[in-house]
Image (cartoon, rainbow, N blue to C red; front, side, top):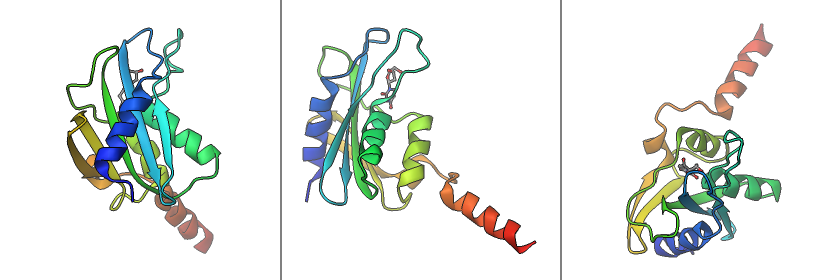
Length: 147
Ligand code: THU
């Protein structure tokens, strides 16, 4: 099985592909699925700013669009482009919500690193308490059908 240190190393190499001409803040992500496959992502910015995609969402959208559906963990690293990482980079709220769409809040692990050897893990539930997900809509539509 892929351990956290390996997943962090994969995120660090994914970060090298970040396209960040505006923020100069390079992020890398490595998403592990239940088959042991690692999906890589980097942030991809845009001159029009809003189309910018975070590294985490790049990894998720690559994976989901290729048929992956069962996710175990994601490692995330970020910091000034062209320099080694030296501080934690936590996922933005939008990316937490995308994780909530495809992952179990209790079991999905989010691994943050500030060096290749210094990392810490959270559950998605830690990072997105009382989140709103697909099950909430499902429950509402069941109630609707009863009336
Ligand atoms: N960014 C990510 O890719 N992931 C995060 O978790 C935080 C922010 C990106 C978006 C933008 O390209 C740059 O970092 C600065 O916000």
